[in-house]
Length: 256
Image (cartoon, rainbow, N blue to C red; front, side):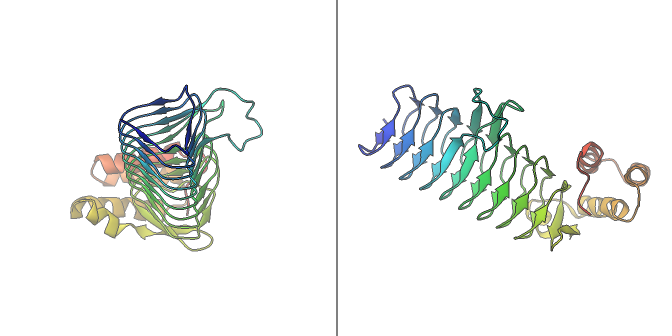
């Protein structure tokens, strides 16, 4: 049975699962689907197009599936998909998609801290941590297990790789490849995220291979030369394949 405060509004066309707690002054609009065992604290707004999974906790002032802040948006039907076991803190805003991708996606087991903004058509993976007041412009992709500190500003269309650590206050407009630390102003490469990789159980041999790959990437003037040398000199493994695929597919170029 759901526990819905008499001071909350739930549209009669909204679809709710079981054992949800809907606090006072929450507003849940039509065309919304909410799973089981979610907790919406007071003053949470869930707009048209929201698709929310199970076991999420959403804190006061959060606004899910907001209308995109994109002048190209003409009212087309789009969605905002939230997975399971997320903690979405105070005043987080997550826009729904536009005709570009049709949906904004946030995976599972993420922590989105206070005042994070995720714009239209972003794709956020699983087990990420995103710090207070960090802002993502439209169509940003964040891969699994990234750690992004507070007050980070990310340009539209950027791609952030898995297991990165981004220093607070950074601004960037290029892609950030996996496994590294980025910091300073202007934002730049500062070596491997060694602490994060060890905490996640990466072996010393794997870390050494990743380190050697980035030594080649950041010592060569041409991307093609670095990729060729990595393929020739380093043992083949999924981490090296991921790095190569990430860099060769980058549309904005990688951060230096």
